[in-house]
Length: 358
Image (cartoon, rainbow, N blue to C red; front, side, top):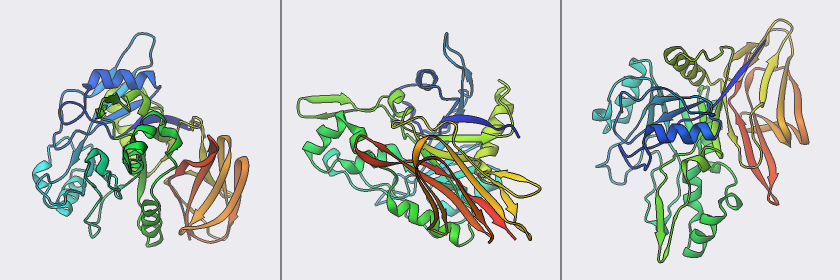
């Protein structure tokens, strides 16, 4: 069974909202970072005419897609930002009612992800908290469990911290907020199939503090940090329409994992399940019947891996590149990995689940 892997980032901004680079320049930064695809999600504007493959001399071609980050700008406190993909429609008029917005996305056969669902304040940079505030909603596709810029914002607790982490961010970045992981596990335990992604939330802004002014996180820097990796049985063709379908099909089905590239590239990670007659990948289901199911994960570097079911660790390996576990009961199984980087154990990989059914 041949599996193809595509690395991308699904949360990015241009000057159409509050970013600094336009689409071609962002695509160039993505190409320089060896990303296969990119989705631009400007605030409350769906930008048309920008999708397609962007070609650069001596660089890989990068597929650019257009989504939207929709939210009610008049809400106080603001929050409940929804990342919307593959609707081919402008939907910001529904921003005041998140459930109606999600329902419309579903009606249009698009995808919706709750952006940075839990955030922490950063008063030093005068940035608000944009957490998800409408947890009664249903029918959304998934959660953005790791937003790099949200985590960085949580580090900025003082002027000294702001200056230090502006120059040494990877000393502070450790992983998604625990509240987000707990919420994801709770949803899975309740039977909801929730896809997770990890993204940059790239803007490229310059921050100033007194005489110090610095573009802390250029797009290219962020594209070498937290990304979403798709795994698919379909190979990219170079045709925009076909490959767009491959991207959104993998996202819809949860055939993907979140990887933090800074400690070590995560490309090549795999999580699969086997029985006597079939094999499945992340996001898929496999029937246990009267058989046992073999869960297997392989990582591209030595790390600490855990297999998690209903929020509980059921198997663990340390300083290994693989983990195996045989299950005899139905459940929702996922893998998470940590790696040592700069004298600290940090989150590295989060798989989407495999669903073992009766």
